Image (cartoon, rainbow, N blue to C red):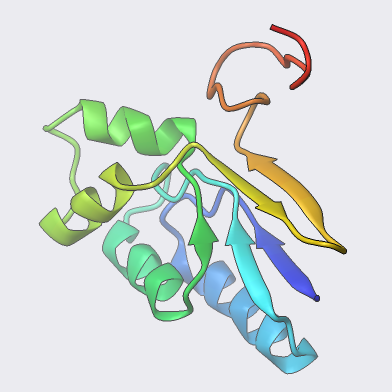
Length: 120
């Protein structure tokens, strides 16, 4: 399985589109996005549309949660709803691939320190 990974696209669709084109050219089986879809750029809706159109497996980052917590921040209704439905981690276990993807700190905190999965 060949995976593509992007993160911290921060509402800038052009570099994301370049990465997706590169992944497609290389025959990537799946694309993962490790959060922070929202943020510094001003093209959130176009960025969300790209991720959705390419079936990217996406998790939420801290900027995404901050946007959702502030109704005054600009985002289309469809983008806001999509971001609200994102998990904070992705777990994939198969015979050959064992993956835990989080945005900031395992096991799924967006702002706390790293904690090993086998420690409570």
